[in-house]
Image 1 (tube, helix red, strand yellow):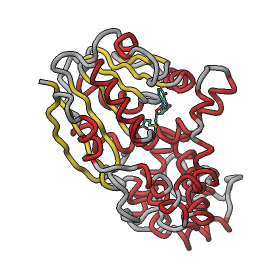
Image 2 (cartoon, rainbow, N blue to C red):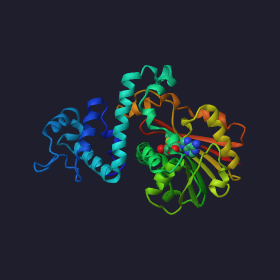
Image 3 (tube, rainbow, N blue to C red):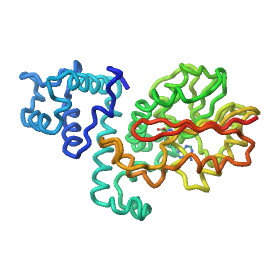
Image 4 (cartoon, helix red, strand yellow):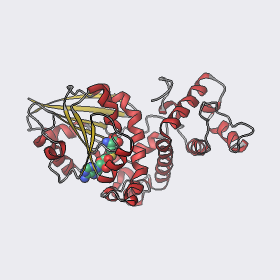
Length: 333
Ligand SMILES: C[S@@+](CC[C@H](N)C(=O)[O-])C[C@H]1O[C@@H](n2cnc3c(N)ncnc32)[C@H](O)[C@@H]1O
């Protein structure tokens, strides 16, 4: 969250389709402006009275004269200033998710594979395009990296306080993407080193976002590479944020076994994930973004079962962001 601490995406995002469409068009035209004033100046070449009339109709919580609407506009202005590509990617993803739910939503829970074959949203997340750092691979990877990075930036304030990592730890973060979560964690936990271990084009995009002391990127493949070699030693912490739901059960169990084998004595595995899908609970369009991934979100018990017999003592903390989340910490004796 940026700007007014009481306002975030949950307060700003509409829950219905016309609201998402109008918000996307408004932001693309530069609304609400750098000062969040929320109106186009008469001299502004972007002035569009028709669009503003639609906005008044579909987004009254953002266009009104009240303090809540002003705070919502200020939040959007700050988000656009900080991360315009991410905000654009968020709205584009919501449009795709809403479209997929409208066209094929009957299949999401009854036949997830058939849904995935048809859905536009899954064409975005094509990890195979991230295997090298050619200009084409980086360009194909950027939209979804922008999307998940902007989500992580919004999720981090709720999750970081739940991540228990001793200072001076060697942290390995498989699937750490652009380093968005690492950038929020590093000032708080002050690690020895935080190694983001992700696919080559993803790491290249992460590096483009700028250097941070203590953060490094290790391009590779978590299914194959030697994790201790990647981390430069046995990691004290292996951190998975929104990663394991990507993988079928057998693969997720194999990844956790690799994490356990790599861990330093007394180390810990930390898993932060959305919990099992519980319905359209947020009342915002974020519910559609979560619904398209609904079959993949699991209860913490699934991961507790995978970690059983590995000599780890496990605690789980739950929280609520756009939906229910959990942070599971599995500590070696
Ligand atoms: C769902 S995204 C989550 C990203 C980030 N942790 C977040 O919370 O937004 C999964 C991440 O795993 C990475 N990934 C997928 N397959 C991988 C592999 N074989 N080796 C390393 N990273 C991989 C993707 O590039 C992506 O960054």
